[in-house]
Image 1 (tube, one colour):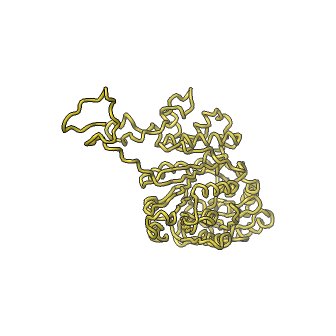
Image 2 (image 1 turned 135 degrees about the vertical axis):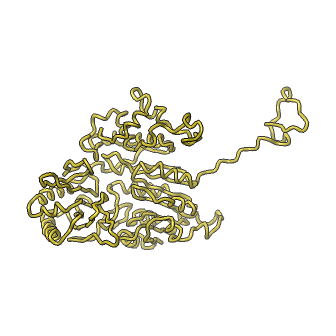
Image 3 (image 1 turned 90 degrees about the horizontal axis):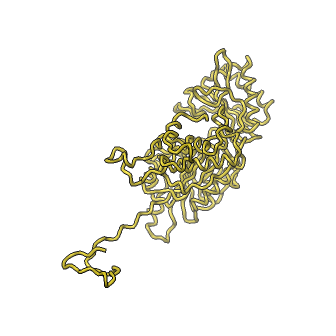
Length: 500
């Protein structure tokens, strides 16, 4: 199996490997919550399971595949779509087992994990695809999916619509010609966004001078004439050659330039139509968005007296889709094209709803100073008052910034829905929530990325219930105690405390 090397350490930690599933292994049992921390006295006797710190989600998938005896059916030649050859029912079962084992190994409440929510379209679903452009020895161009040593050319993918695959094949032929060779050699990435019939093509350059731009405009005319599925085309300049293919680190830069077509893409989810710029983040699997938004609303339970705070709101997917239920909605995201699109989407889909957006990076300071006053501060502790704030967070793969969780917890929201596009980020983030008084009460896992060893996880967090203080062990009188049977009643001692 084409999984990374750290998996070997996790596998080596597994006992009973040959005779039983990993869920039955003592080495992968959940850590004892009462065990002392590492480095404490006698920690060696009750330390966390060996290999848990390096046990990544892809390792859990690898073990689940092995336990299901499906290893010989994987596509080891294409690690980005390694699960494609599996029957989709088998893939969903493997991923469910992997999530449960991953949570168990990391000491999380695996009993909350339900069966994975399947994707309505398990293959050919990706609404965003990319190829990194390399110049091989001899000057030959290669379109690759991976980084570093993973430079095998990939023009077609089973996870992308045929319309995407056709565009890559056409561009590969055009950029190999002498006329457009300079364009190809100046590229970082080729990015395609959109569904099967209406696409946006983005050429990500690390070098873009007048000559290259002239050739690119000529290429755009060929695209308009020969690729009717491409409705818009853009250039994007990133001289840093970042692996984040739509990121520019140059302060004050305006890297996007439209060559032709509309400035917005569109999608429909939860009965709402959304417009979003090609530079904005959007889920790659549009077919599962209805179920995704439906479960978010069911878990958060926004009511007429609640305020919904949508952090990392982007173009307003959650804020608008859930905006018909709460009294007020406030979205926050970095100031850019997406936040402007969010305001338009709210006005178009929820004209009568109280929805606003704050253009700001999601930081502790912004949460403290740029959000409206907390309802609890305005209404006090009266139970008849509005139920308070609900938060939803859908951050990047790297998670939230330090102390953001603490800043949210200070507002004492009734419920928080934290969305993870990286399962590996779950343990660290849930530990931070636990430290700030919140614990998971429900979990939903979505197969947002069929064919690959990745999932989207939705965790509902609520205030941790405090354990009732134990009754006192000593009392001055026998009142309230169950009396001893008369024949077994011990002799009483003067001036001594009785024990229950």
